[in-house]
Length: 170
Image 1 (cartoon, rainbow, N blue to C red):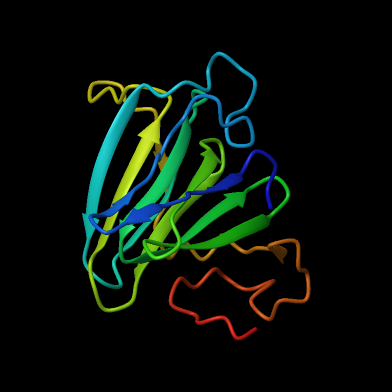
Image 2: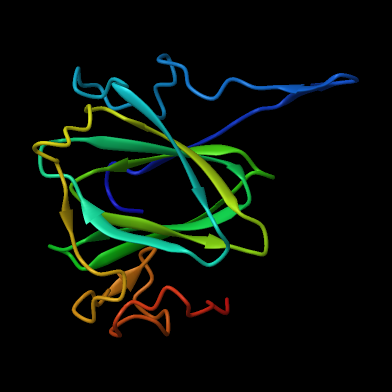
């Protein structure tokens, strides 16, 4: 995985009433970096219909994003433009996890499956409509060509323009 990306599995406490789980704790040292800047400032809720692609963007002022899928599934990708390495993570509501993505990586997601995706994401910076901390590129930008995917240089998708709709066969 790209440096700074962390995944924290979420434990569900199940009983006859349903379940309870903690979805964010400051003392999760395996998730948070040891900096004062890695503190939650805003929480957002996103709803995406099946097969919607929300990509690519990055943050220029040190923002970190934490993604938690509460309904459906996503393919979450982060791309390091310097090394041309891409990290691909499948995240779903059936196996809850929080995924930390440093904002300087190009990142985005595709809603997978046949049901809408419900995503909650936490950010370390407040969004400013007047001066957004974002740089964008098209979801199908042909210049985004990974030279490794999840540290694998032999993945058949390596060396080709990233195709969100290409189904990996492992």
